[in-house]
Image (cartoon, rainbow, N blue to C red; front, top):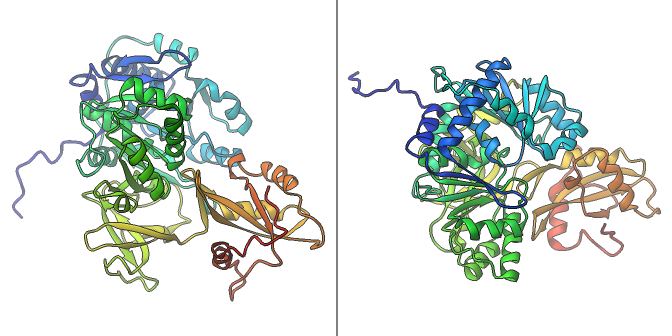
Length: 524
C-alpha cells in the first residue's frame, strides 16, 4: 500500500476548538439573557475563565476520564464547562433538568459523577430529586469565588487522543433505564464540521446563533462547539425560554440562526403575530426533536418570512444526522438527506436491506463517525446495534435522492415537545392505582406539543365513574409532571395480540377513526 504523505496523526480534539475560540475568534461574544440587561463577554475572556475552571477542577482532584456533571440552563458558565471539562481530559456529563427524580438519581449514580455544577435557580429541583454527588458547586457566587482563587497562568492542557471520551448524555429511558451515550473528541469535532456545511445548518463566522434547545439535550444539537469553532456569536437564553423574551432577544441581538423543538416555535409564532415582533434577521430556524408540522413550516414562512429547516437525529447520533432545507414547505416537512459521512439504510423484518423508492418502509438504521456503537457501561441492549449500524427504532421510507421520510415508530413511545414519554411507565403507574385493572397509553396528536399521552383504562368496577383528578394525583407520585396525561378514556378491555401483549395499533386505529372517545369519555 502506498500511504499518503499527510499528517494523519493530527488529533481531532476540542482543544483545537478552544484555541480557535480564544485567538482568531476572540472578539466575538457570548451573550446570556438575564432579568434585566444581558451579560456579555468575549470569547477571549471566556478562554481565560476556561483556564481558571480547569485549574479549579484539577485542584479538586478531577483527572482524565472523571465525569463532571452540569445541571443548568444554557448560559455562559455552562459553556465554560463545555470547553474546560473535555479539554482537560475529563468527561462532561450534561444532566437533563426535566427528568423525574428516580431517573435523575439513577443517571448520577450510574455515571459516577465526581462533581455537579449546579445552576442556583435549580437548587430546589436538584435537592428534591435526592440525587447525590461527592461535590456540588453552584454556578453563582460559589463558582466565581472558586475561579477567583485560581492562578492567572494558562492551564497546561494534556495531549489527548481524539478517541478519548469527551461528553456523556443519557437517553430518556423510554424502555428500561436511561442509556448513556459517550461522545468522543473526534465525534464532536466531525459533528460540528457537519453542522457547518452549506446543506446542513450552514453556520459561519458572521452569524449570531441562539440555541434554544437545551445544552443537556445532545450537546444543544452541537451548536456550542460549532459556534466556538467558527466564531459565531452565541446567545444563551438561560431560563428565559418563553416566547416573549426569545422574541425580544431575536430583535435586539439580530439572531441569524436558532434551533428548538416545534412547541417553542409554535409559541413564538403566536406571540410574534400578536405583538408584531421583528423576526426578519433569522436566516435559518432549525426545528427538530419531533416531527415538524407542515402547518408550522407554512405559517412561519408566510406570516413571518422565516424559513424552517428540519433536522433529524437522536441522542445516539450526536444528534444531527440529516437536514431538510431544500424546496418548499412540503419538501422540508420530510426529515431530509443524510449529512456527508452519515449512511442510512432501511431494513425489513427479515434483516434484508430495502430499496430507496419512497414507498417501501422498514426500520431506519444509520452509521457514521458521530454515531454511537454501544451504550456506556450497558450490555442490556445489544439488539440496538446491528453489525456496525445503529437501529433507530423508527420506521421510514427513503427516496432515490436519499431524502428520508419517517412514517411510524417501532416502539410505543410518545414524543411530546421534543422529549420522550414512556407509555410503559405510565401504564405501570396507572395499574398501580386500586381502581384501575388495565391501562394502555397511546399518543394523540397535539397542535402545540406534537403528541400528548392518551390514557385508556379498564376500571375494576365498570359501573364506577372515572376520577381523572385522582389518577393525576397518583401519577404525580411516580412520573414527571409533564408526563401526566390531560385526557383519559374508559374502555371495556385492552386489545391484545396472540401472545397476550397489548395491541396498541388497534387503539390507535380507533383514535384515528374517531371511535375511541365515545359518549361518556371523560377528559381531564
